[in-house]
Length: 109
Image 1 (cartoon, rainbow, N blue to C red):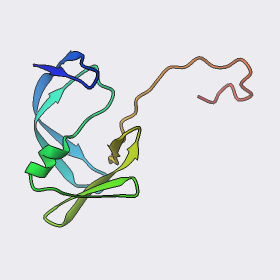
Image 2: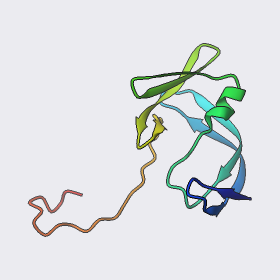
Image 3: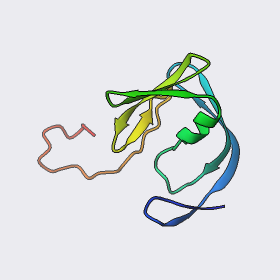
């Protein structure tokens, strides 16, 4: 399947069907009809999808919390124009950088 991203580019997506996301609250969020897009560096969960599945949201002070049946599932902090979920197992985007020659701590990455 082809998807169009925010800058208008077309990217290839593979259907994953169901993805189980473990949140920091230890709750399991079962996401149906998911797509895997290898060129994206972040996982994106659709708020409209969660809304259609009965979730409610509280957004305040740069934090978005979401609930289902009055049970707190998780929250995300506002970072770089997105709310990033607080996950049980964090996912890191690792960039390779050259060490500066004037670095007094050469073992520091």
